[in-house]
Length: 515
Ligand SMILES: [Zn+2]
Image (cartoon, rainbow, N blue to C red; front, side):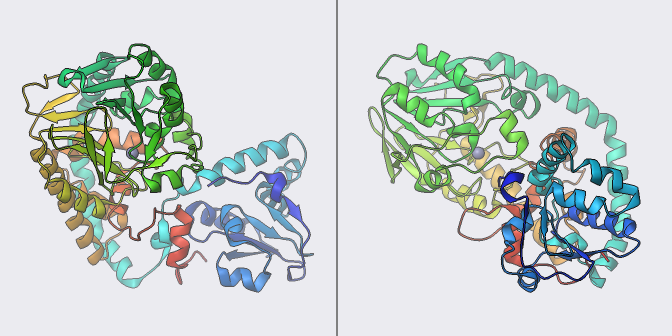
């Protein structure tokens, strides 16, 4: 969700009623960062010049109807005693001027260039605070006696869990280093490569770019564009375009008959229109994907920096129906929600080949993005098991097959029955579902439920610990093990809304707020 520029919303006159001499700070009561800000405010405000009010529709109604709920959730709003509203950084500076300890900050914060710098810094935090402050629904701040009691008994659990980690720490570090080396080797062995399989029917183009290359090196996820019987699938992001262009030089003109996007994620769809223009063909996407890309919402900072913000999709894109014609046949289009709501996979019944996209990203995947719905994913995998699959191609270039006409390639082809791979993932997701459900039934805090999903007794829990935590840190919590727990408690038919929309619809917490 973009933060409007300060000039759009900065200071405006209003007839909002305000208590004489008292400033009113409107803050997001479900945001850990905003709550910490209020804690500081309460320490500094010895003369009780500021009232802090958590935002709710009712609170805004009482204050005045021209205060927009979304705008208030997006940035701090301060109503001055005379009724003027200060927004964002200007609101922070306005409050800072009230107290001797912060007066200098507040005063400098009003004059250039400090004002502009303050606005920049504030804008960054405001845009990313939901990644940093993940307590959706305010569950962590809701003080319930049963929950407090439960937490007390969790002492033993945490000491045990911590000990388990400490005892394995040398192993954790060793595995992390070995995995990092493995990722580097696979990256360089696939860099810029083109892989022709099934007598040229299936081509994998490995994509790269200076910033995107960080992902295969740190996360181990490869970037690819697929070419299947003339259909180009998921041709990467604009930051990978140069490598795609290089690949195109080696492809005979007229080979590509259509361009398809499997879902709206930026590393798959940023070149759809560009490639279609180069090949002189049409773009085909699911209708939901088209809606999400006209225009696409602004990505969080880390994803924007590394993968790149995709352009808006051309409105002339065709919607995928149940079947997608290829150069010599056709592919079945299968709706496969779970990884995200608009996801589709493509199946060739003749070849018994499934182009799964991101509907299959390895049997074990611990750091999903915030629009994964694992319950839907379980249903999707159950449906995929009904298909006769001999070759499973993932959206990031990995292939699972036992077929002799698919050669073994280290880091790309896994000699494994695709059915067994799907079944293993299903077992893992069902087990996670059980852990999460029983955790919530027992009223455990989310952090503890997360820990029960990664018991040290299961090898993958400590083997990937260092990498998972690195991913969490580098993406400001956007991709994390915590998201895996949350991915089981999502609901609703529509594409998942942004964080504060989810929280707002659930209603504000009623008690236990910081006092
Ligand atoms: Zn994806």
